[in-house]
Amino acid sequence: MKLANLSGKTIAIMVASGFDETGFIAIQRAMMEAGAKLKIVSREAGLTNAWNGTGWGMSYPADATLSTALAIDYDGLIVPAGKRHIPTLENEAHAKRVLRAFLREDMPVLLQGDATALLQLIDGAADRPHATADDAGGAPVVDGRLVTTAAARDDLAELEAFDAAVGSVVDESCAA
Image 1: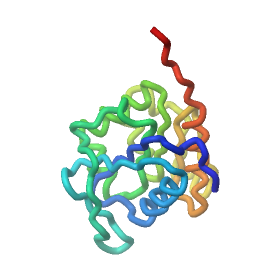
Image 2: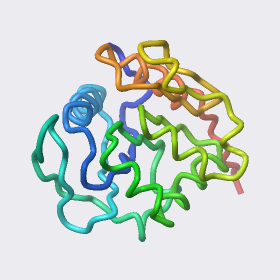
Image 3: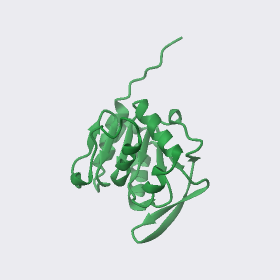
């Protein structure tokens, strides 16, 4: 898989304890191979814990907390699958603030599986085309720079769509 647009980019991965470890590791590996900087943004300061199928997995150090994270510090946002961490993020005001900022500024966002439920919390985002449970196993749904998938895919096709969304960002800076 070639993810050329992610090279040198800083990507936030927003989690709370209970995120899917298998999917997280696959994303982490793909980002490292692409030359991207993956930064864990978590509700928890210090360490956040993954869920590995039937029990708690490894603990991962958070690079930033949701309460201090700003969308402008990143080139894109990924919220991985994991039915155990999404309810925590749904009830976290700072998670909503961060996601709202990425969507408002039309920055690249990838929501996997249960994370698509977060769109219901953002004004105007619930009506955007996105993957649903009925799309399980289907191709990622792309709406501008928003990429959603009903479940984390083994082939990581959603990361290729996310890479394309990162590549479509136009440099809007102007010389003074």
